[in-house]
Structure formats: structure tokens, C-alpha cells
Image (cartoon, rainbow, N blue to C red; front, side, top):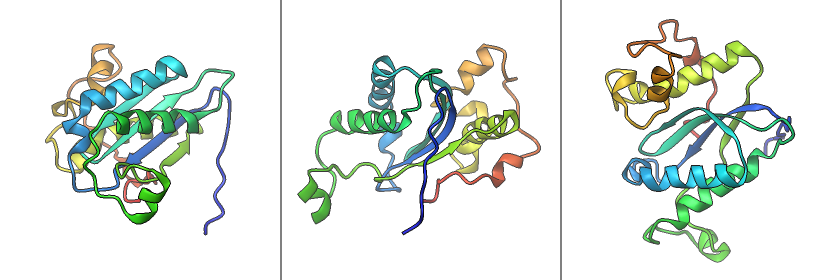
Amino acid sequence: MPNYRRVFIPGGTWFFTLNLLERRTKLLTENVTALRHAIFWTKRRMPFRIDALVILPDHLHMVITLPPDDADYPTRIRLIKARFSKSLPKTERLNAVREKKGERGIWQRRYWEHYIRDERDYRNHVAYCYYNPVKHGHAARIKDWPQSTFHRDVSAGRFEPDIEFGDREFMKLETGEDA
């Protein structure tokens, strides 16, 4: 078992990847309203800022910033996953372990998190979020994917609508996507 240690920094910014257990489904995009509701339900109870979010059929990426006096991102992730799972009918296959523990078979148990260290790290992870639908062949251009805060950022003047993230340095990031 790996020696895994999480970093807890009040007011910190993190990149997350949350994967579905069944990676060949379209559960997230088919239920995008329920997922958004779960995120905003959690956000109302435990505030955080969504810096970037992209929802793909079988996983999502997000960059969030916590309030200055708060480092509890694990509870936020748990609440998002649980709220989304509770909104769906129980139709998924369950293995004996999940059934015995009363778990759902929607999400992978773990998730990838990465503490954002500096401005360059932040830019690379936001770019990774926005480029991900293109990387996976879901869209020809970043602006073509509807389930993304990219459109919010274009409206706010943070990005041009036709940006391509030319240097693609962010493609070298460890993101937990293939976990």
C-alpha cells in the first residue's frame, strides 16, 4: 500500500479528478443537472470557489479554492459524490464488498487531489480542465464543450473564446485521470 499523505492548507487551492466506477458510461453528462445540484448544494453548506470545472461523461476535473480558515476539502468531495449518488435510482451493479458496506457503485472510492503550489501550477491545471474534452475527443475545440466553466470565464474576459492553450505544458501533469 502506498504511503499516501494529504496536505491540508486553510484557504488553499486544489485540483481534483473524480472518476466514475464504470468508466465507459455517460452517467455524468446524462445527469449533469443532478451533478451541478450536488456541487451547489455542497457549496451552500461548505463554501468554496469554483475556479474551473469540466464535466465529462465518466469523470470530472475541478480547481477549487477554500475559505481562508478552512482546509476541509475531503468532506466537500464526499458530500458532492454522496449527494449525486442519492439523486440516482439504484440500478448499478454492486460487488459483494460494496453491498455489504451499503455503498453505491457509482464513484471510484478514491479521488485525485493536487495542491496548487503557484500561479504557473494554477494556470496549467485550469488549462488542463478546459482542454480535457478535446483531449478525449468529445469536442473539436475547447469552446465546443458545454459542461465547462470555460464559458463563464470567457464571459468574464479571462479567456478568449478561441484559445487553444498552445504550449500544452499542462499535458504533462499528473491528474489521476487514468486511476
